[in-house]
Image 1 (tube, rainbow, N blue to C red):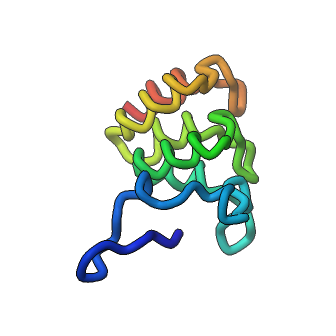
Image 2: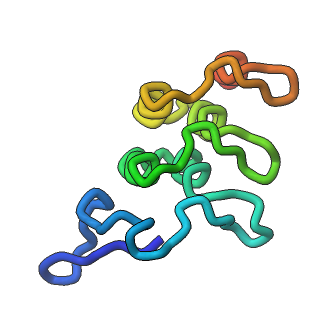
Length: 115
């Protein structure tokens, strides 16, 4: 994902970048070597809360699934042992469905499995 640069070439926060949809970019485009994911799921996986917020502000739905049908909430809660609590909170605040299931477990059950 490209960022606008500030003085000295330092990357600026995604909030300062023009919204992706205004520049013609598709905020729900597929990503990954095999197009198995999308920008919101990548941001959730890596705990990039500011990027997730920018994508949600651009109109990406908080429950958009990746190619393996994993919701961003599950990815934010389980991709590292401690999860990404700020990203989880953001997704919940923006309407992510805590009752959505992946392999017959809710996001909450997946988080509990991972500690």
